[in-house]
Length: 224
Image 1 (tube, rainbow, N blue to C red):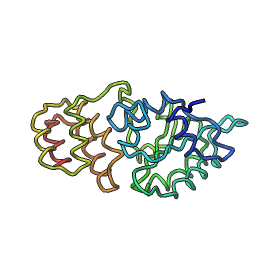
Image 2 (image 1 turned 45 degrees about the horizontal axis):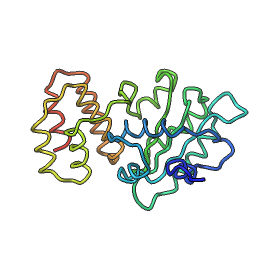
Image 3 (image 1 turned 120 degrees about the horizontal axis):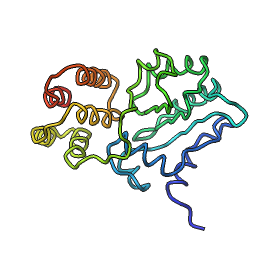
Image 4 (image 1 turned 90 degrees about the vertical axis):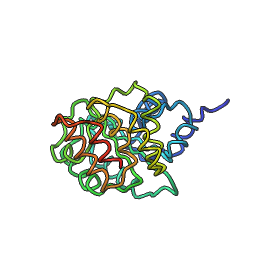
């Protein structure tokens, strides 16, 4: 029987700890990663192109009703496994149910997240988690996960990742984004940023949401 390449890929990198039995299905993985990378992903080759090395998923243990501290500790151990190249993605599902101890245990790794790691908290309601966690993450609640970026937006991500300033500047010059579009592109590029740039990115997103300044100007300031 032929094995679906994506399923085999995820099963290979999945943590085997007994408190992480559940996995996102293929379509959920594709939808989520398309949103955070800004690329239309439908195959293992698409994941490789986006430098996604491994996908770890964590969920409520079978015999529990809450996302517990033991599962968070398993995630922290897995985050210590540095990839040879690319990024590891860690998806904590149903984190709205996380206990206070589980949420507090996650705080330190959120504060000092390695550059190769992307931590995704799946929550039903952002208000259900601690303010100290919410202040350390970027909110993708309003990102329309089914939307595929236009070619111009995809070019911005590609040029930025390749550090091609000329192509990036030319593409930025040709667009006139709304504030919502500018925030969306920053959300999509966020997983590729190092720690210093994530701080700047958060500041620009806050400025886009709170002021009437030209969105293109703020994107120019961030990217160039």
